[in-house]
Every structure is written in structure tokens, then in C-alpha cells.
Amino acid sequence: MAADKNNKIVVTCSKGIAPFLREELLSLGCRVISETVSGVIVEGAAADVMKLNLHLRTGHRVLLHIADFQAPGPDELYREIFCINWEDYINEVGYVCVESSVENPAIRDSRFANMRCKDAVVDRIKSMKGRRPDSGPERNRSVVYLYWRGSACSVYLNTSGEPLSKRGYRKIPSTAPLQETLAAALIMAGAWKRDLNFVNPMCGSGTLAVEAALIGLNRAPGLLRGDFGFMHLKGFDEEAWKKLRQEARAASVKSLKGRIIATDIRPEAVEAARKNAATAGVDHLIEFGVCDYADTPVPEGGGVVILNPGYGERMGSSEELEVVYKGIGDFFKQKCRGYKGYIFTGNPALGKKVGLKASRKIPFFNSTIECRLLEYELYEGTRKSS
Image (tube, rainbow, N blue to C red; front, side):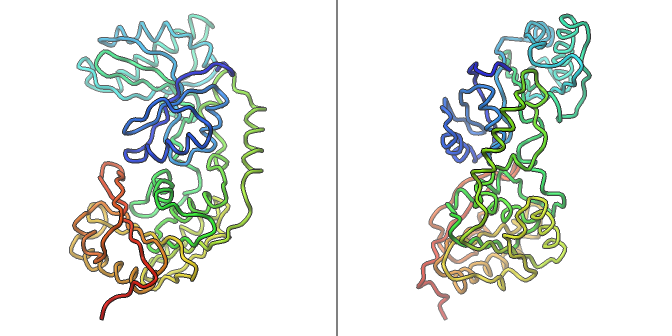
């Protein structure tokens, strides 16, 4: 990787998250070129790739652009990829993985495209260096990403390796856990600030609470990980990376003014959340409790209260959940005055059972499920009518 050469960088994300990712990239000083439904394109150099992997909360992968070309079929794909100077990026005694997104009439199985791409990469390196790197499915070393639509191909280096959503702290997942990047985007959408309270009933494995703590501390999520794809590429500047990490640590704060409260009715979920928070180094900032959501303590001073109840796709039946959603509305009205209330749901019909009018309905996707983050202004005077 040439340290001072500017390249196109594509940062991917889940659908619905791109506006929040764009704001993150702008705050990091990036020049945004364009935005798509599932990513943001910026321009930058190797140092920017490291910075993005370290600091981004809502991005999924940081892809460094290598080449564009036309390839009607697999033979043309091989020839074009063989012409790329892979020996400048990947060590001949290293390891390479190929992943792809392919829609081409000549390809029935994307694994075949991956194999042809991998063959071209390792054959090129062997022809130039006399030895070919190992290859396989592991994404914890050098990773090549192929994007192929029709005959148009783009090739990238996946500098993240494993997705950035894999922070490394969620050792014990719960049923239907939120992805870390989605949780961060939900918190950003709610505009929570570290001097306000953050209340998360139905906390599950604690992802929302942990992400809130990391955001509140201004702690770079990449500090939790010890391995990224760019670390296995030629030209990796280890000293520059150490400096970036030191600067990130120095920029984080030690404490929060507001309280973070996370509860769940299931003791095993709370125990898992507590352990995940400890792995992330933020367990001392989160007040965990085992109780029904309606009994969650809501401190004075205002802030955000957010719930991620089931919505009938993967957890619970819609009939049972109608009672839950109505109860959440009562909880908001009775205990959360002065707060902003949020419900993340993939079931619009259940959202109507809350009994409050949402001030905003922010679209997101949880995997393939179209969801909404419903926002409620819970004014001081709001009270359930008798």
C-alpha cells in the first residue's frame, strides 16, 4: 500500500445506515464522493484506511479500490486480475482469501468466481516471486473483494478483514442479537449525548448499552480488536498504526455524566450482557438489573429510553407481542416523562399498539427485515389518562 497515494475507498454498511456512516466519515475529515443505499465512497490513502478501521462505528467493511475492468466471463476475469500487480500488495509467503458479490449470467455459483479470482492472484504472485501464497476462506489475513455486475468488475482489498461489526466483545450472544454497527446507528439516530441518561430495558446481550458506553467515552471501537486485514498487506506501517491507537486512547474520556441502565427479565441475558460489557471494558459504567421492562428504573434528568422488543419474525408471536407493545406505551407514559422514547421494530402493526404517536419513523434494516426506529417525545406533562 503506497502511503501517500490517494485511492477510492468504499465503506460498506447495512441498508439504512449510510446517512449515519456519511456523518461519521465527514467527522473524520474524509472527502465524501458519493453515497449509496449500502455504502459511502470516499477518497483517501493508506493512513486513512487505518483511521477508518479504528474509528468507524457504523461501517461494515473498508474496501480499498484496486482496479476496474470489463469481464464478460470467467476467462476474461482471470486474465484481467492476473494483470494486476498483486505482488505489491500481498506477500508470497502470506495467505489470501477472496470474497465476492457476483451477478453474471456466466456464473451460477459465486464460489467459482472466487476460485478464478484467487487463481489469478496467486498465479500472478508466483510468476513474479517464484512462490504462491496460501489461500482459503479465513478472513483474518489478506482479503480480496470482487464486485462483478454483468461484465463490469471492480476489485478491492478488504482492509477490514472480518467485518467491523465484530468488535470482539460479544462473546455470549442472546437470541436474535442486534449487530453492533446497527446498534451504534440506532443510538446516533436518537442523538443521545454522554451527559444524558441512557435506559435500555429488554437489553438482551447488552449490545445497545455497550455501544452507548463506547460512544459516550469517545472510545474508538477498533481499539477492541487486535487484527485487521490491512495489517497483513505489504507496506503496512506499524509505527503509524501504533500512533493512531495512542491518539485514539488519548481522545477517550474516563467517565460519563449520565447513567446507563440495562435490564432484562431473563437472568441469563443480564449475565451475558454483563460479561460482554466486561470484555469491552465498560461494565463499570452500566447498571445492570434483572426485572420486567416496566420495572426498569428511570432516573431523573431526562435522556433516551430505547427498547428492541420482538416483532414476530424471529421472537414471539404477534398476538402475545400486542400486549407487550401496549405495555411499553404505558411504561413510556407513566415512567419516562422528560425522555425521548424509542422502539426498534420490524412490525408496523405492532408499532400501532403502543398508543402514542411517533414523532419520527426512521428506516433501518435488521438483516433482511425492514424495520423502523419509532421516536416518541415524552413530555413532562405526558401521563396515562384514567
